[in-house]
Length: 91
Image 1 (cartoon, rainbow, N blue to C red):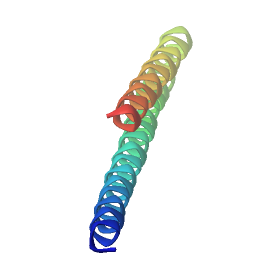
Image 2: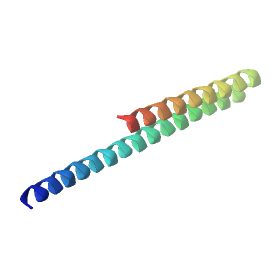
Image 3: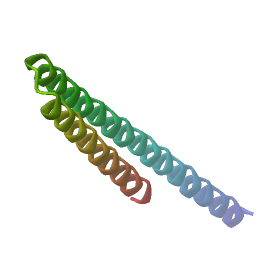
Image 4: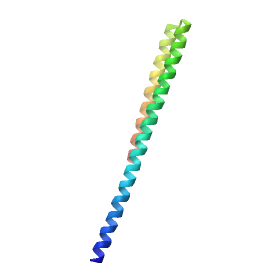
C-alpha cells in the first residue's frame, strides 16, 4: 500500500510538472507570434509612410515601390514570427 502511494504521488508530480512546461511553451509561442505580428505591422507602416512621402513629392512610381517594399518586409517578419512560434512550441 505504501509503495502504491509513493508511485501514485510520483506520477502526479511528473504529470503536473509536464503540464507547467507545456503551458510555458504555449505562452512563449504566443508571445513570439505577437512579436512577429507587431514587427510586421511596423514594417508595413514604415513602407506606407515612405510611400506617402514619395507621392507627396510627386514620385508615384517611387511611392508604389516603397509600398511594395514595406509589404514584402512585413511578410518576412510574419514568417519569422511564425517560425519562432513553432520553434517555441517544440521546445
